[in-house]
Image 1: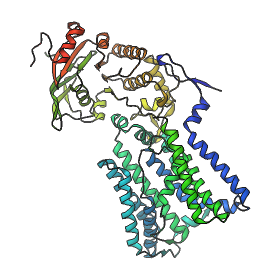
Image 2 (image 1 turned 180 degrees about the vertical axis):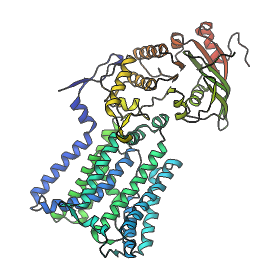
Image 3 (image 1 turned 120 degrees about the vertical axis):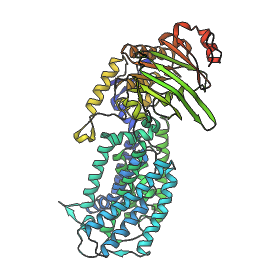
Image 4 (image 1 turned 45 degrees about the horizontal axis):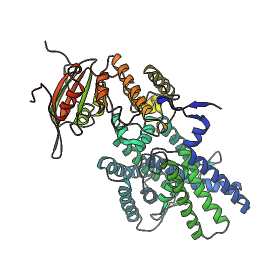
Length: 332
Length: 251
C-alpha cells in the first residue's frame, strides 16, 4: 500500500495511506452504498418479486427523472445553496407540455418551450440569489409557490391527456436496444454531471464556492455567474424530468411533483453531498435516489401501508442528515 | 526625469459609511523592493491593500503601474497587471486539492477549452512548490487537513505561480508557530530574490527588520512616516505607529 507523508512543514509528520484518505473523503457515500446493498438484500429475502428483472427495470424507469434532477441539485447544494422549486417546475413542465401538444404545437416547439420555461424559472432564482444576495431557501420557496400557481392556471386544475402521435411521447415510453429512453437520458446526464463537477473549471468553482466563496471571487472568478448558471440548469433539468414524466404517463397535470423537491434533496444529502456545500458527489446522489426508490418499491411489495412508507422515509432522511453533519462538521 | 515606480498609488480615499478608512494615501513601490506597511489596528493597511488587489474599489485616487495610469476595479484587473495578493484570512478552499487551489481561476485546460488538464495542473503545481522550497508530499491532497504554515505556503505559491511583478502579503505570519514563521520569512526572501516587489503587512515588528527595505506607517487612514528601514529602530517604529513619529513633519 502506498504511504504518503501528508504533513511536513513545521516538522510534524503525519502518515496516511492513500486508501485511508480515499475512505475519509468519501465516507458518507461509501456507507450509503453499503446501506443500499443491505436494503436490496433485505427486500430480496422478504419478497419473491423484488429482485426480478421486471421489478428492477420498473424501479429504474421510475427513478430516471429523479436522477436527472438530483444531478443538478447536487451542483446547487455543493455551492452551498438549495432549490425548492424543482417540484413545481416539474408540474409546470408537465402541464405546459400537455397543453402545447393538445393545441397542436408539435413536438419540437413543445420541447423547446418546456425546457426554456424551466431555464427561465432557474434564471430568476439564480439572479435573485446571486445578484441580490437573498438566501436561496427563501427565493426558491417563493418560486415553488408561484410556479405551482402558473401550472394550475395553465391546466385549470385538471389533468390534460396527451394524444396523437407526436414523437416527443417516445421520450417517456420507447426503448432503444431494449433500454428505455428515460434511462438513456439519465445515464447521459449523470455522465455529464460527473465530468463537469470533477474535470471542468465550472465544477471546481462550484465546489470552491461552497467551501469559500470569497476565495473564489478573489481569484478573479465571477462567482455570481457560476451560481446563476447552476440555478438555471437546475430549473432546466426539472423541466426535462417533467417532460419525461408527462410523456410516460400520457398526461400533464399541475398536481404532480408534490414533495418532489424534498425527495431529491433527501437523496442528494443521503448520497454524501455536504448539506452546506463544498463537497458534492454525483454517484452518491444516484445511489441516494436509488435508495429512496428501492425503499418505496420494496415496502409496497411487502404490502406495507403507504402511510408507514412515508414515516420510514422521513426517518431515513433524519438519519442521513445526522450522519452528514457529523462527517462534514468535523472538517470545519 | 522622474523615477519610474513599479506601483504608484495617489491620494487613495475610501469611506465605509461614516468612517473614513483612507484619507488620501500615497504609496510608491520600487521594482524589487520589499515595503513594510505598518500601523495600528484600523489604520487602513488592509483596506489600502485591498484597493490595490481590486477586492474593494476606492472612492477616489489614482493607480500608476510602471509609470502608466491604470484602472484596478476588480480582482481580475489586478491580476492582469501581475499584482498578486496573499490575504490575511487564509483564502483557500478547504475541499479542493492543493493544485486546484493554486490554479483557482486559471486552470490549464484542454479538449475544446472545456476540461481541466489535470496532468499539467499537478506537474506545474509541483514545480512551483519545489522552486520555492515548499515541502508538501502530494498536490492531490485536500488542503483542509493541513497545518497553518502549509496553507500559508500554498497561498504564497499560488500567488507566485503566475510570475507576479508585485506581491501583496497581508499578515502572512499571523497565527503561525515559530518554525512556520521562519519558513514564511524565508519564503519572502526567496520571492524577493526572484525580483518581485513585495508589500508586507504584519504586526510582528521584528519580522519587518528581517526582510524589509523600507517602512511606511499608516495612522488613522493617513501615511505619517515613510523611510528606509535603516532609519528605524524598534523604538522609533513603535512611536510612529502610536502616531508621533520622530523627526518627521506630520502633514
